[in-house]
Image (cartoon, rainbow, N blue to C red; front, side, top):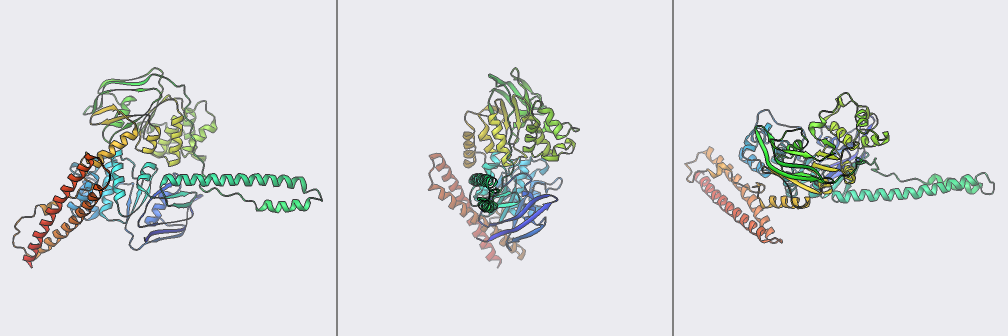
Length: 595
């Protein structure tokens, strides 16, 4: 169990901001670690230090000589005009068939593989960058918010891949469901200190909470004793008969020290908008068709959402979730039919087309004060602080804010308002775990209507009371809970209903097209034959591994349909294995003839 890297007594500061303060941790070659910390705590800085892109102020980073690091970067490493396949071949220096084989694990095939990268969505580009990582055969993957832009199916596909990945991972994410499904260990960064925990993220958060509560109880007892001693000393120090005892108590008082509550950072607190609850239908869609003049996304939409509902809009990327949201808030006109909101609905919208149009000349505090008319300044500052605008940051002009900062300002404005309907497109983006939990608590307390999209399963499962699915040109209420929807998607992926290529090893095209009767070979041909044989040997080994995995699954509990699917897949693997062995034997004969 070699240690791939170890960081010891690390210190790192930017001006007055201390990011690492004696931080120490290590990662071995057999663990998958979820990395947690507040926004701005220093997670990205630590990743850059481990990558060698930044230096510590003091401390040491020790890397194992065999460390092969794969890092999922947030910036795009693509060249203008290149296809996905060309990028993979350039980045990895591997042949096209090998690049195509690995890309297939992430459903990158056909037009997605051979078309220009620039036309791929953010989610598909993330898949492409993951495929590029694998081609370098790393023994430690470092993933920084890998679920950003990924729809539910792609997240689950990535989870399956990471569970089967036989090397170490360090994953930064605010998505607790994703970390819980992929990571067996947790690393926390708080107030410059690293905490390694040999368990999943939920257990780690519970451990942190229990430690904090234990320390707080201890501090309360110490403070009570301190007050008692101070009172005794005050009453007795001036009396000759008790002065000596008072002095003794003073020495005991000096020894009383409270316990520092590590990680006891300000807890985000968000109050829900205060509104009068309403009854009846909040919004009704009749004969609705959505999309654009050149392309229809969905048609014949017939649905109603009641006041007080919290409805999740679900579906794959590209199916039309955001198009549907934009249509119901009238930022995109319907192609047919109509959308009607109930009487008295006051609608607040959180979406990219909204938070990019905030008033440029206002400061953060100006904007939030306007949105929170009637709210106390302290309450406005609390919500601003929860969205990471603290101290002088509230005086920043909106014109200088980044996209993420504008998004948080917009969300804070909604939460200070009196809207009785909130339409939210990915509200958890740009927020850390603690702030997402505070947002969940606020929305659960909110008595209005919420229509939202989110790729964060923990967030959605906590919030949603109903589900609308956008899929294959239809928008309809899903008959079941969000957990039922998750179960169905998992089953579809596992059963291959969407023709996932993950785990299906195909023979290289150049091998499949090899002539049955090879011409008389030259010495150059012998080199090619040896190359093809080595390729086949890797293919046969992969097929052997897959066959063993399928045989193991046959011994696990399963229903009749699943057993039949496993048997069918096992038969297909056996056929591929036999074909590969036959080709290898022919190539062996060819090589002997050359010799």
